[in-house]
Structures are given as structure tokens and as C-alpha cells.
Image (cartoon, rainbow, N blue to C red; front, side, top):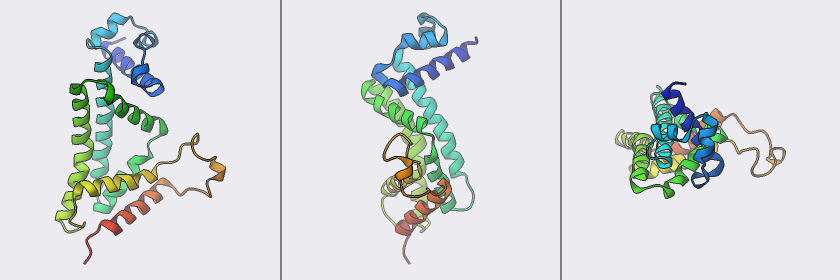
Length: 202
């Protein structure tokens, strides 16, 4: 097994444990056993142990999300098309959404340095581009002249409606009141509602 594949196995095992047990419930022993390595091998790849592994798992996921965000923002056809593509990013499977939440929750248990590194990558890579998109649309006269941060947060809040309700929460699917439209249809409706409220009036 190559050193790189061992490192990836450790990161994958840590992500699985983080998802299932949360940061404080992670067992490095279980991770090493699942990867078929000894504990010294884990510390060879991650000398600072648990927190360093968490940092790498968090940054790896954020970087994957940045790639998806950049693809969405590169969609041609104007602001509406870009916003629909951004809203569609909320169609992640339940596992990824839960892992995102676990990564966020874990920031309370790590050092200020790690929290700053993870949070800065998240803000700079995932929030700032959307805030800049809103600011550019304001500058072009397409959106109302309000705080771009407010527009971004409003858009994100509305976009959460695109995500399916997990089967294991809320009322049973049979009692939810009819068939749910396709995610892209919901994304388009959400964006139209957002633009109706946020567009600059003549």
C-alpha cells in the first residue's frame, strides 16, 4: 500500500467516525485497525494526531465544495442561471450534509489555530465568491442596493428548500402531501422568488 493511499484511508476512516460519533467520540484505534496499520504509522502521516486529521478531512471536503461552487458559478446564461446552479448544490445526499454539520460542530473542540484555518478556507472559498456575485449584481443594477451579505444569507436560506427531507425524519413520506417536484424545478422557483424580492425595481 502506497503512503498516499494509507493517508487517504486514514482520512476516510476519520470522516466515517466523525459522521457516526462526532469529534469527541472518534477512536484512532478503530481507524488504524480498519486501515490495517499500526498506530505509529498513523502518527507518521499525522504527527499531531486527531486534530491534524480533522483539519485535513475538513479542508478536503471544503476544497471539494469549492470545486463544485466554481463550476456552478461558471454556468453561462446570466445571474438567474448561476443562482439556479448554486441552489442545486443543496441536492447533496444526506450523508454529505450530515458530515458538513459534524465538521462545523467539531470546530468548538479544536484549537483556535485549527478553527481559524478551517473557517477561513470556508469563508474565502465558499462564502466570499457568492457575496461577490451579489455585490457585482448590485453594481450592475440587477439587484437592490442592499448589503450583499444579507442577500447571500437570504439566498442560502431559501436554497435550503431544494434539499429533500430525509426519509428518516419528519412525517412518513406517504403523509407529506403529494409528489415533490424535481429538484431543478424547485431550484428555479426558489431563484425566481429570490429575484422577485431582490431585484431592483424600476
